[in-house]
Image (cartoon, rainbow, N blue to C red; front, side, top):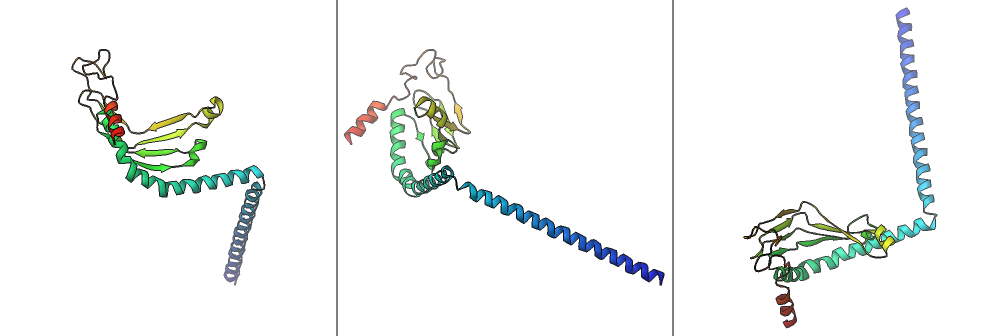
Length: 204
């Protein structure tokens, strides 16, 4: 009889422990629900401030315009205009120029948190006179610096180039990019075909 009574008491103790654990679990769930409800109420309350609503509206409009630009204008630039720009750049520099494609345009870049334009991959090959070249397989990103814009009242852009590789080739006169002694024809002229390129465009 003593063994049966001890068994029943142990079962009762386990039952009380289970009930207590369940009660604690339920209470934690309730506390978590109250915390989420208060956080949601505070988040909604933030939008009662006019400047928060204005920022949200401006952000939505910029995102909408950026989406339209990337869906409509960017493909036109990549497929209809970019080949012509590459040809003009190649003629002006007398090098094989690859501009890649415009990857993304974001008007949110006006506040400097995202790039205004990202494009690539890009490369500039050697010329018949100066054999140096540069490649940027990851392309470049153009940022607007809003702080400098406010301070100087002028648009200041930062260009980020990731993963660029440059090969500098020494000239026959042991110069580098035409320095300290220039070559003949000049290696310092970065746009040797500019005049002929402009003449071709005018003729067209």
